[in-house]
Image (tube, rainbow, N blue to C red; front, side):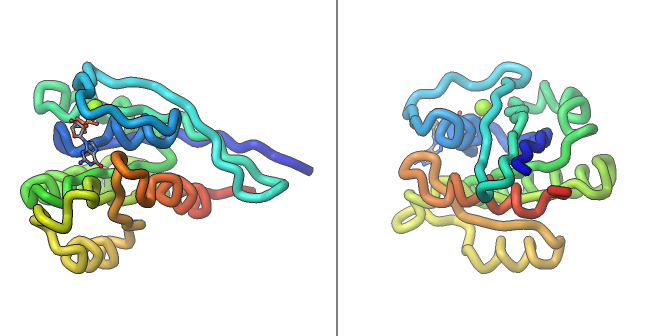
Length: 172
Ligand code: GDP
Ligand code: MG
């Protein structure tokens, strides 16, 4: 019989890497060059159909990346089934920030949490890449994370990212 399973997903990462834009692309298939930055956190939902029998509903918490909201993050990741940690492929320090979020999740979140690392803004990579794909991929393999380079702007790998996560969740 058909089933719909619900999972809580949290987005983490430095400010301006494109967390809200990835969610906007995934939920509304829109992109905005001048997004207002998120205050606190925003809540949205979207479903992914895996097959005729199985639909996954994501309850998405899009957190603000600013330091002043950092103490709120545990509220959002504490009961999360999955996390998308985002960096900007043009900004190497945003990968370092992503790694520190991943360490925090590995220490403090549910031990079964599914973590995906997303290198966003890959549409800019031809001229402005700052993080080699192989470096991030190697790190993701070492830490057993899902990994994709994405673009909220041109849609590259956005639905693939969420589908890849859905397939890793306990669907029984
Ligand atoms: P957040 O602070 O991580 O939520 O980042 P936002 O989603 O607010 O995006 C910050 C800025 O980056 C905005 O100006 C977006 O338009 C831009 N942006 C987001 N994703 C992409 C992308 O994939 N490609 C490009 N070129 N710009 C992006
Ligand atoms: Mg935001």
